[in-house]
Image: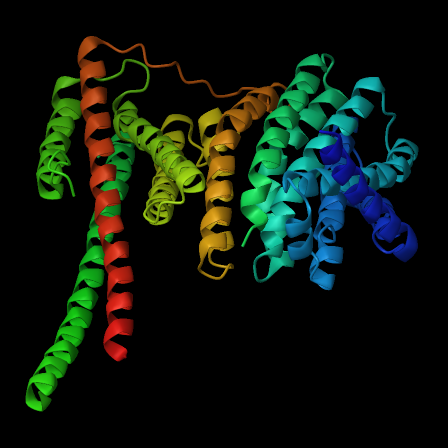
Length: 213
Length: 55
Length: 228
């Protein structure tokens, strides 16, 4: 068990270190999400309700996540390292978990920029909304890391990733928007938790089938 | 035909058309398979008669 | 091919008989609905198609699971054909559902029909299955990735169902309602006959498509052998 967690930690640390050195994905995500929010200001008609703004927040988050997920496996595929990783680790699901945790760190870092910007430009975010963002981010990274690995094995992966990811992201958007605007966010937060549990377990179990040749 | 009848006919009609289109696709596939097996059989017969001719 | 497996032609003949019986029952036996009138009859073809689509997706996922657990050769084509059938019936569900919406409410699309919205999401998901499958080189990895995606699909079905239910609370007020069929006995009998006919038809189509795909594979191998 400790060996497993050691693998996971090492893999996640590697990704974080690579990003700290290269500094290409994270600034891009932060800039993208702020730019998207500005575009949304111009996209929303004058009398639009506050609820519509919360909806757009989630669109921005999903597409920012897609940006990050598109780059998630780039270090491995550029270096041809995925096969080596697959051989090196005892349990391949550790690769998924390490990658998901690193991607989550990046997404949360981008959200630290995005959420205050949203609160500044549009509407305040309360506790349930923030919890919804956190829970949905977990789901996005869990499912996204798996689906991104699938796309990495295919031709035309930049186009394929959004097609694979967006239908799976729809329930997350529902949960997130609901927790932001509903007077009773409990059901939506519970639903997000359920989604996270189901798809994290599924992704964890299925990952080894995706990466082995 | 009343409006209701038109829609019922449309729904059932869509289904019927779909089944017929599927049958047509299968028929096309079958004729292609027939052609290809014919070619392969010709190849095989040519080879066996060539073997017999040599042997 | 074991003896217990019913022959395809027998199943097809039975499907034809069931289809004829179901049309008779739908239009001559089942009474007309008091509220919706004649357009309610679409229910007898729309709902079985939807249920059959779910069954096909389930079949595709089951075969996918067998593939991942046993690595049997046959399961890849069986899973793929199941998903293919499911997607076709899913598209039919959307079309017949749209016609029914127009007949009932005067609009070709409404977001308040939870079943229609669910099928739209699933249709998007399973269309992406084909994009995924045909972007990967044929081989064991493609088989496994397709299988994993098929399994994600059946997990998505209940999750999306709940999501859409939750969403209907805040996205659109439920403007259109359709009472769940309070079916009389004869209506229920007509529905069941219809359901059986369409399910059997789908199964016959599945077996036929599978036979076609397997024959393609055999032909390709034969050609390679003869070319040597």
